[in-house]
Image 1 (cartoon, rainbow, N blue to C red):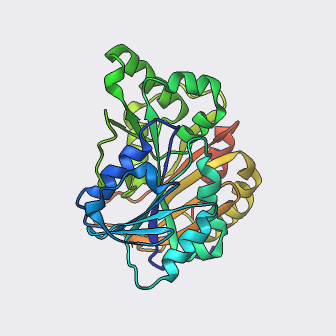
Image 2 (image 1 turned 90 degrees about the vertical axis):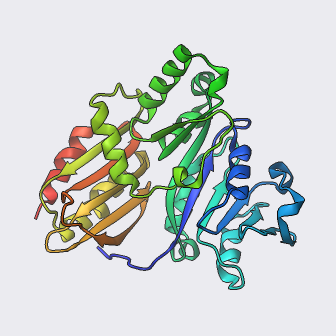
Length: 319
């Protein structure tokens, strides 16, 4: 199992149906003060409506802003734009945020960061954030399969326009979201007013685990499942490599996403890995802290999975 150590540029995907509030969120992110320099990739500049006073320099595909942010327009090829950004040494940025189209399944875009060498070498998928219209999502989940995938694949759910529903309806919506994805962080907003730190992972795997264990029990959606594999015993690196290369790949058609933190026997560093379908990456993370409980935890998100089979296979990985 080859472990990557190179520092990469983190990427956040923002998905959600038309009218949910993605553009409003991007506006907030582009105009608010940030410690990180952003490169934001959108479908159309006109939809963002950036204040002319903020513009520094523009060309056909890239707008530079006086707060250090870069805004790029995707015509047809997200990979091309991302490659162009990283190859242009005159522009520096710390994070990329990508807006997907309203009906887009985020999984193929996420997969591109794992199977396209030009992207895999420079970028790292940090989080998928799905913007949700609280007044429309129940109908969308019933009528549109893409809605369920957007929610199931997300690390962060931004439940927007909550002012349009009452407390009872809000509770029903949150319960339905938890059925599809019991592990994601949920933020409640009225006009997509969220700061950058709320849509980045920041040790998201650990946060997922906390979300899951605090609630204890979830009624999962009938075909989309999310669960956590846990081991308090150190894992054998070679066994983990075989498990990912054989067991995970065997089940990859039904795996939307998987990610986790691993405690490897004989190593002082945490190991992080994530994947989409058959494509995955792993890297060496920071050192385990002295007061930190060492354990391995893997989040599995997919369709029609037998949890007990995954648990039994994961239990064989101990050193």
